[in-house]
Picture 1 (cartoon, helix red, strand yellow):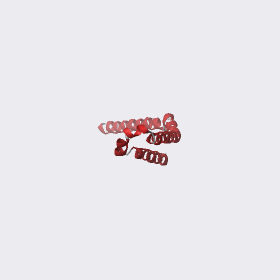
Picture 2: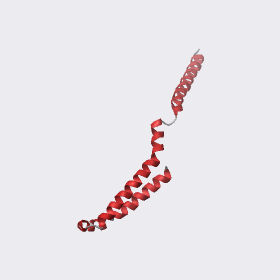
Picture 3: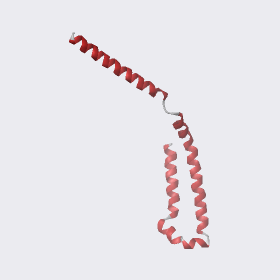
Picture 4: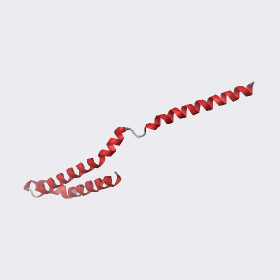
Length: 100
């Protein structure tokens, strides 16, 4: 009698575990959510837009360096290597483009 109860209990637990796994795996069947897919598809355009923004700001910076007002901040620009920030931004965007 004890053996039959133990066997029944083991079968019940195994069945419950399998049912739980089936329910869990069925929920995974939909795949990646649409929002994530849409964001991934939009990345190349976002990268291009950011490259355009960096170029625009770099052009503004270069024109500012030619203005007389730049003399007031030139020491900071050299010390902090502001022009290098544009190079770093382009490198990051290039890396992002390669990854995505």
